[in-house]
Image 1 (cartoon, helix red, strand yellow):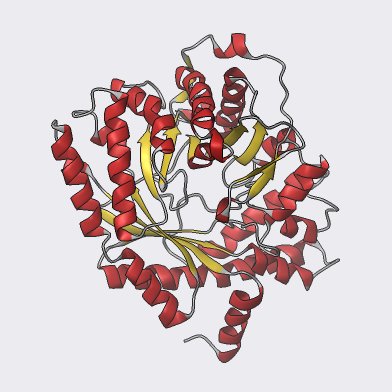
Image 2: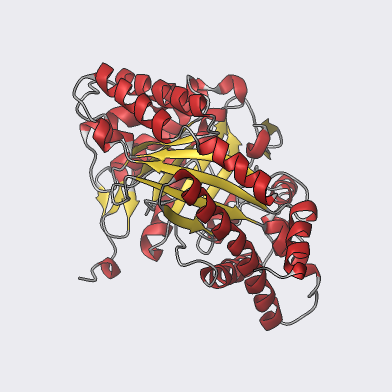
Length: 454
């Protein structure tokens, strides 16, 4: 049982340091829904989701009430839809119909987001995957809670450059389709390399085919807690710094483990993984940037930022791994610009650039996340950014991602407003020297030599 001191300490984490369980994500396999008739498939999908997830939100609220633990989101992830819709969907419009069904099902059970409007063309692209990808702009325009993702590379397969080229165009089309709301559709679209099958965080969550029929995955977050702990060791050496982060991550992860086990028990669904990722919000005191600055940086983005982030990521994992036997997903530190007040400030001042963010992604949890860029940025430039980030993931055998928003009608110095957890972001400058001839080559960048480990 926790000691009285631990109880008091945990209460302070909730009340003063923005500690929360960021999400309970219910993963649902839709393989049993497959049918060649679109109307039957739509009916099967809706019934499957609304049946399995009917108590998700209720159970989340019960856990919040029983343990006084804030649970920010209750989410659903599904089997990548390009697999489920392959037999029935003959056009992109068919996939848009499925998108609406998914959105309606999520709303019916009260889920905040549903992920899995996903294609996996890491080595080659099937017709079904291409149809789904081409449907994304319209699908995100006509839905509210749907998230889309495309995994177009891996360490084992290399990078599908045809998919990279197409996704540059799709990001532009999605921005245009939702331009009335600062191109918000792009905030729900992520392009990945080495996507994990068990990620509870949106927009990249999907329920991989290697997973059980249903699972509960939990994402816990606590940058404010880590930051408060670092305040007590200002000026201390790196050994002390690392030990402080590690011990704090252990405490935060134990909380997530408790929530995961309770959700699993109450829903009678197996516990999958606990994701240790530190995910910021726009709230003051809930910032990864602030954590890095507490280590001794004047502003996130200055020299030393990548080293500080590497240290943070590693110690969070070392501390968390001892508190749960089921760590998975992404697990590390997210650096989304629009969702982190200190990142926003640094980007607005010019101290944090896209190039520095790219360097930071070599050691962080994911990649270039929630970055607003000028609306007139070309599709080829966006494809180049995606290719760069995928290359980092491929070579380093880690998950990387790009969630970038070319905000239609806005230029450097202006702001995009997304609201809620998505926050707001300054429009950041992009190197517009052309990479079009490179992207136009097509084909595939082969897997690196160190991928051959059989």
